[in-house]
Length: 158
Image 1 (cartoon, rainbow, N blue to C red):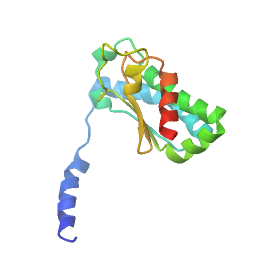
Image 2 (cartoon, rainbow, N blue to C red; image 1 turned 45 degrees about the vertical axis):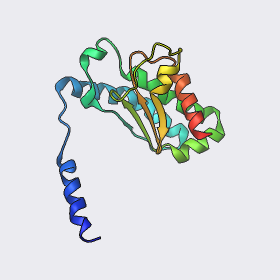
Image 3 (cartoon, rainbow, N blue to C red; image 1 turned 90 degrees about the vertical axis):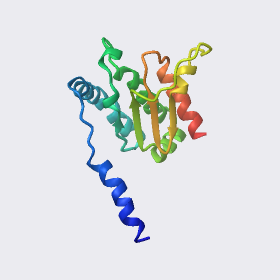
């Protein structure tokens, strides 16, 4: 074990030293996102009895892709759906308070839209709950976000 420890440290030190340097548009996006999500996240934590933080991959934000759009408006309904579950359904509140530890709305990693997709297929394919984190790969093409986030959580908890 002692021989492995230096190798492990060597493997992780470069990763710890690496910090993401955001471009100005990405810094602005982060600031707007953080501001827009503050109240919904506060409500989620109060109503669900959690201490969840929200994360995003701002380094993958492309201003041209989201021009004229409040990109955080795709994430906010997902947070609100889970908050509503805690308010309206005591059994789900209990499960969510124990299992939800993180929330991610990501600009990257989304699965592409398919010609055969129905109204909700694309959005559902880009939402998931694993390891305590609700993850949503946001896109301008997402629809019915609130309903799909609720369905994703129900499926994950049942």
